[in-house]
Each structure stands twice: as structure tokens, then as C-alpha cells.
Image (cartoon, rainbow, N blue to C red; front, side, top):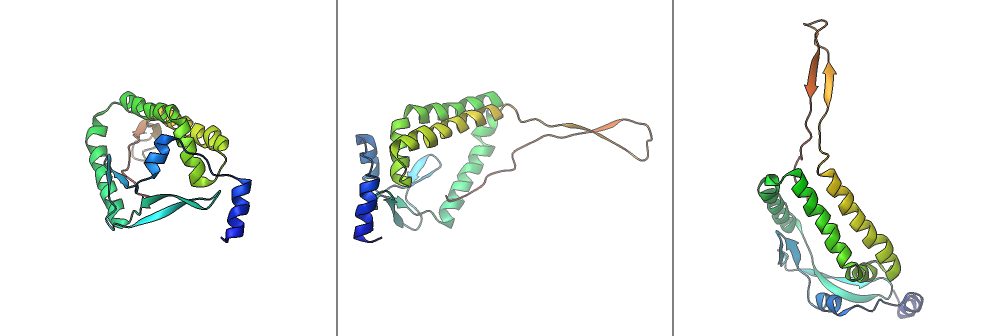
Length: 180
């Protein structure tokens, strides 16, 4: 992007003025969140995040790689087969709902971050992206108590006229690792 293009973009969509909490958050190199802790990427590499509305660097972010994904997947498996598996579906639902509440409680902060990350106007980031995120957590919280199977009538050739059923149970298949 040339200097002329940058000034045109900046005049059309000025950068969001960040609140103190986000200014402090973005002022330091951002690590990876793995196993509930902020950790350095295995490679030690970072990359800049640009506000597309004005082309300014808003943060330096840890660059996750294969080793980091493996660490995150191992941690998620330990949680899935450890503490998370001990929770009842209702307890899981409450936890996921609470995440939505926490995001909603910081909607202004998340809106600012989403705006500088995507270049969207602040009002759109808050009213659309943040609100939809809260809604999705609450919707999925309801799903935690709705995991159920089905009963399927089946035929058995060696027992004509007999009534048999196959019972199914839905269960998690495991952990998925993705860099987005």
C-alpha cells in the first residue's frame, strides 16, 4: 500500500481510539494462550497485526506453528479426558453460558479489538460481531444438555417378526487443532 493509498483509507475510515485496557493489552508482544497460560511460541517468532482501516501496526502476535498446535491439542485432550469429562451436561452448559456473559460484559473492549483487527467501524464490530459471539456461546450452551442418541428399529433375518432396536449414543470424538 502506498502512502497516498494509506491517507485515503485513513480519511475514509479513521482508526478506532482504543481505551486504556486495550492500549495496554496491545502495547506488549502477545503470546499464545495454551492450557490457560500465555506462553511464547515455540519458534519465538511474532508477526505484525495491521489495522486495515489505516494500515498501522496495532500489535505483535506470537506466530503459532505445528509444535504450538501439538501443545494446545495435548492440553485440550487432558482437559477433555480430565476435568471437563467430570462435569455434568448442566455444569458444562453453565460454563459455556458464563463465557458469553463475560464477553458481553466486555463488549466495548472486544468491539475495539475487532474493529482494529478487521477494519470494521466500531459500531458494526460491537453490534454484529461481538453480539453474535455472545449469542453463539449461549446457543451452544443449550446444546450441552441436548446430546442424545436415537433408537432405530432394525430387521434381523434369522428372527422373522421379532422386534429389535439399535441404540445410538452421541459422544465427542476428540480435539481439533486449528490456526485461524
